[in-house]
Length: 114
Length: 112
Image (cartoon, rainbow over all chains, first blue to last red):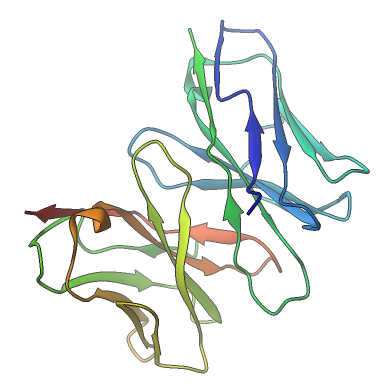
């Protein structure tokens, strides 16, 4: 079965640079979520989109922005990168209205800021 | 703020034994809880969920127990196998209609 696809899988950037992470949800899923997971930490919810509209917002820094496109893929844009942004970034997707909150996670993008 | 959290950061069990992973939550309004398994270098994987109108739910080799009185959640894994070695997170639907809040993970180590 098709899973959530994230690209790139690994990314190395320098401080103050920008980065764009991409997420392709499971086909027919209408909701995407972004999480940040630092080393040894639990995933922290950043933001979610339902039908291309922002549906929930968590601890996303103002330097970050995200959107969901008409084909339901999503991009997380990160500017003025800081060393503390080094983390695993997960995207998850789900289908709203099924009665379940189950989210399907992608393999993650490992961002390293040097 | 409201949060969920786990009592033990690391749990070591002998292969074949049963494992119990505990979780405490503080938001009494939470009505949906999920257990995730995360293997090294991978994204969290859904294991089992439970709604607040239930106190027990069983899956394949796993059982989740919910005690709303003391705001406690547990995951029981029967006949633990080496493939069960991972970090386990409890999570709750935390107010936003889709947002999920993860608790601190517990690392399960299975001793062959």
